[in-house]
Length: 116
Image 1 (cartoon, rainbow, N blue to C red):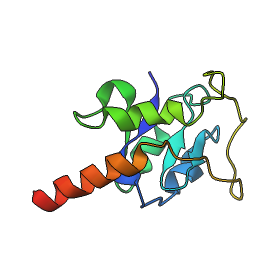
Image 2 (cartoon, rainbow, N blue to C red):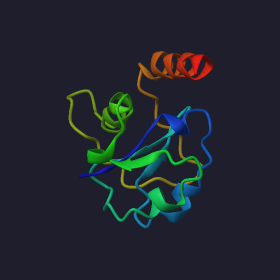
Image 3 (cartoon, one colour):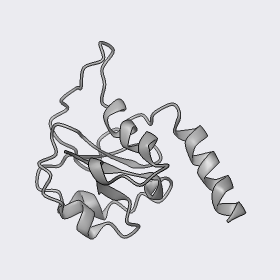
């Protein structure tokens, strides 16, 4: 079980979660943050402090958010499909490249929010 960041983080990037993480496993992406799947020790500190309630354990991901959970691993895959081990995030690091389908997913989310 790992923690993942969901759609509520897209284009918000508050970043307070990075200050509570004892192992620096939350990486800044271009439009959202991502939790590294093997560096995370599952302490839950980030979940408790997230101001937009975007962090969940992967077995508690709400319906419709599964693709965001999968992106938390996908952004860390190397060209051979293995999870890269960058060794921890710090301010000033180059952002992690967002998953290619983030733009499509976030546009669909925005449309759903406008309709409701």
